[in-house]
Image 1 (cartoon, rainbow, N blue to C red):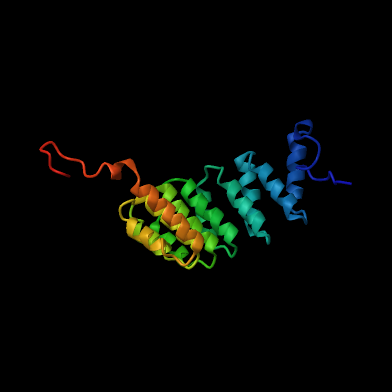
Image 2 (cartoon, rainbow, N blue to C red):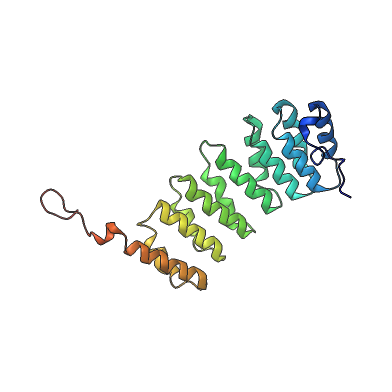
Length: 221
């Protein structure tokens, strides 16, 4: 029989007073099952910041990385100065799931992202983290990231190389051509096939097919 002791697993919350639900959520943060602790964090993440932030912050030290990641993600919902500090701290977490969550948070919060802070992830032990950096750089359209993306496009993991090349095409279409040509002879079969397809589309694009655009005097520019 399914247990209904947890506030987040019990009958609809609207039938209970907020005080009772909050009390149960606090108890669930100490539950032995990490899934229950995660659900409790999710509930608190939609509550009063003055109550939720201190409780969720304590869960950043949870032994389960999934719980730590959820705690960090939930804290990002609150516009509180401490969140930025916590994100920078957990960029160095021992688990890649938490590091990826912190990376997403750093970009999500807005403001200027310190590119030097991201350089440490070029040699991160997890290819998932390195791939996330490559993807986020393309998504954020930061300036001055060409050298970083070129470096990531030479990563040992083909998934990282592909993510970096995708961002290069988005941000630096002309500068990325040489790297895309090299990718067409990549040692990874899937990446070679992908690069070939992308290059074929680039060559067949209307702008290229039209050739150089003449200026008013008939000269090519």
